[in-house]
Length: 382
Image 1 (cartoon, rainbow, N blue to C red):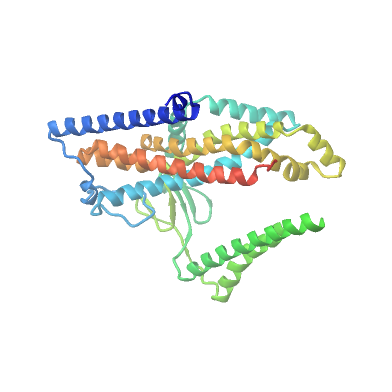
Image 2: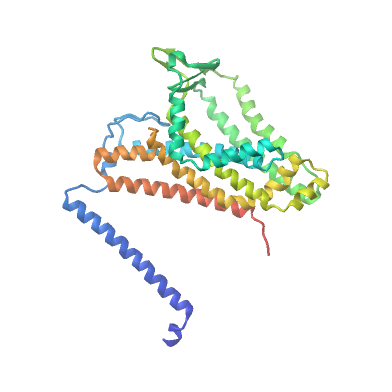
């Protein structure tokens, strides 16, 4: 017993057991206290409300939905809207942030100062205020009858952006399959080309080859099917447009706000990652005859990527969680739909619990994916 008491490992196990027990005890107390208070006030608990009819419409839905559907379907629509805005926002913010981050290091005085002004101005203005500004700009556009028409079939008004979209056709499923097959082939070609170059020193244009395969396979399938392609053009009927695809003002404002705001932080991450690479790497690459563009693309950015992935993960998580501010401008994301559900059913604890569980799952999944990628690109040392 004396040996166990003086064992640091044994004491560590005991401390961990005590901490875990205290956490579970606290959780049990909170849950039990909440259920007792709800029962005392006659408030129903449970998730049986998810199967009841929602009774409200949702302005934007990537799947078929009507007011006669259940609350579970309504929450699913909100979740899909959240995932859609988060995915598109992450892609656009990454591209814009990378460009701005590189521009901050430009030798051109004007370009560098403009990039610095963008970063400092955007980062120091609250995101909610920026969303209101973007929403005000979008909704101040002309009405549909006076809509801007920059290109044939494209109309920009306070009802959103209307664009032509292809009409549904069975061939599109085959095109998607061909695209996936092309991506797999391009990935295999890249692995083979990299291994071949490391073994023999001879480069292979895997980028051009992969692009040709990714674009060529769907194109070949499309042409073999007779190139069936018909556009659904938007037309002004009455006080609004019909047909075509729509980018709503709420979606556009939220996407613009999240992209511009997050890109400012990503720009600083990219800039710091580039500066973390020793300048001797640039001198060595240029001494070999590489241009500045190739030096940045082939030497600097691959090394900077290993530095910027962890903080970049945090910004992706922030963008996903900041999408909950969509409720302020009326975009039907998960939080907005859940709030409507809570107001109608009175199941506030369950509604908030669903929101917390969903965002926790999304954050953990995104963190797992980025950590896996970070481990793949990390330098392996002995």
